[in-house]
Image 1 (cartoon, helix red, strand yellow):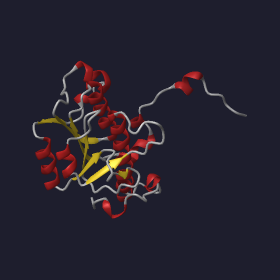
Image 2 (image 1 turned 90 degrees about the vertical axis):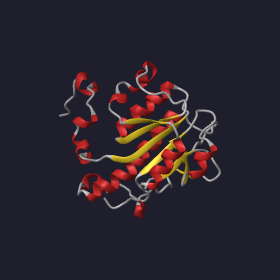
Image 3 (image 1 turned 180 degrees about the horizontal axis):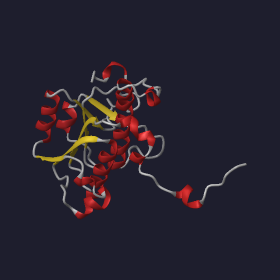
Length: 207
């Protein structure tokens, strides 16, 4: 005989970390830094903090006119994540990016340029620094020039790009998916190791 669950049981919200599914991620930290150059909207900055917290990103680098916490508009969308995610203000984003490359980071610009590869075909070389620019003007030419990779999100409708914070969430979680499959397999977590790892290959470093 079928047992009907109560309305409270059906509607109950459970934090992801409180579920058994989350145990396979124990100890995982995504080796990804996000560099924001001249992101105009504080609401977008706050959304980056919230997505970075959710995906386990290591830090945010804020440059140009990009607002820094504490700001009420940032907190409105970050909802406290700005107090959990490591961040730094950088005066020279070009030098910061080059320093990261010198320390083994792949520099990846999220842009709709001619040389951009589909995010789902991208084979990142972790650790990775992902760069996002101004909502209208995008990244500066000097940063685009030094990036190892340009990445784009497929857009099948009328518009050619997503809101920058929405794009940030897509990219961060796609990087988490690619990195987590490898990390979980390396740590003998078979419940997720069977997921497709077609995009990982040798580009994911030995941990």
